[in-house]
Amino acid sequence: MLGAKGAIEAMQDDSFKKMAKALVIARKETLITLSGSRSGRTYKVPGTQRTYTASSAEKHEAPAQATGELRQHVSTSIEGNGNTIVGNVGILESAINKVTKSSIGDYAKWLEYGTRNMAPRPWLKLSCERATPEIKRILGAK
Image (cartoon, rainbow, N blue to C red; front, side, top):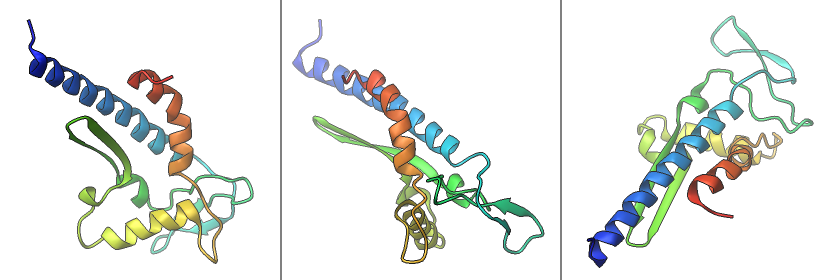
């Protein structure tokens, strides 16, 4: 028979496992969002002869993949202490080396929220919205 301490540890372990499953779903959906073709203007990939089709702000499309740099840096983390467990997905500081940290982190924010010169290309919010029903099922939320 489990004592109170053993029961709490078992519940925390189960919660971490559920959060890990939810983060797999969230990351997978984010990678899907950042994949595929878009319907904007065609540009050359800087430093190459390849071309790509950019996303369309008018159609609220997620950003297109010119180099794949953003997609490569999508990661997850779980933090927990006591009764609180937090799952994160996105461009996380722990997954970025010091050299590229500011550029990819800034780029991710500029795409998500836009700038004075560029309309938003939401990718993280869209991914979270698409993943929410499955995440709620995994976590047992209604």
